[in-house]
Image 1 (cartoon, rainbow, N blue to C red):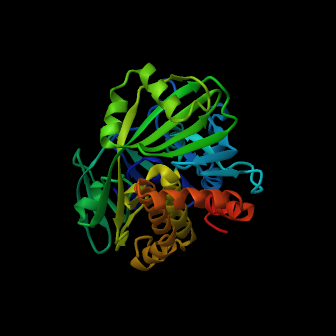
Image 2 (spheres, rainbow, N blue to C red):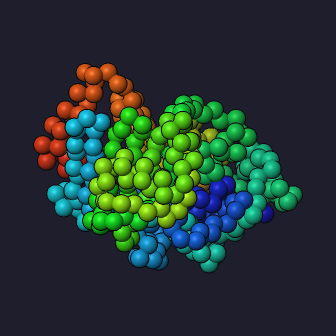
Length: 387
């Protein structure tokens, strides 16, 4: 079977790319081991979708089909240092409707797959995995685990941080483990969150409460491995008490709505995101610390930029040409590198216990908080990538 674009990985970045190519005449394939499913209750894996990512999802026809009762706008963000530092961001002050929108991962992915199943130019191969990958001059051959062979002019690796495509093709990735786990769980809260996302830089990690619909919050606690294991060992009531206490009982008593889960945190850089007929997007190309909440937004940025370049090509032009892919790589070089650098520097800064650095970082937060022009500029960059 012959395709113009074959995407290995049907997660959010890969599936959105396939949807974004719906208006083209390109033959698209998606290979994914597991079709998405909605969990009972609220998904533990949630994302803060930036206005730029929301606009992209709206453009490709996904956002309008998401259930509004499962979406929670973030109108303000309160950040607390490890002494007395404080920083407050407001969508209203920056002239925005919202800073971000909190959405469950599975909610977005299931909707994307429903769209893909109806899409005339997409073939879904799931459950399926790539057994072997053989690059050629005119195409790349992918043998699936059931023996079928697919050929494509452009192979897109969207198969996550542990990318099989990247490893199979020998594309080196430089990984720095943070020796931390991101512990996630959902809670109902005694007092309303008022659409405010809260984040604390603590000695035992970075704790974030993200608003969910109703009196609910989703917690992400980026904690050192030992402390993370302690949190995971707590029963639901003890975990809720620990999380409420760590946040200064800002929303009163918490009640656990889900069991805690965890994922390892690491910084990953890939020097080579394109080769002839191959491109890496999303977590296959870069991972960052979750304290910025920008991981999936980078993936959507990759998908949007790549889809736009493919759509702009004349019908006779080969989407796997190295010149096309290098132009994409140049376009996407700055944003991931900048966000990786900023989040890594912030993580290291707040892990340093030197008294002078502790004073400097908290003083810096307070100074920034007193400069509304700077705060608004930071908000505009965080939401759109542009000042």
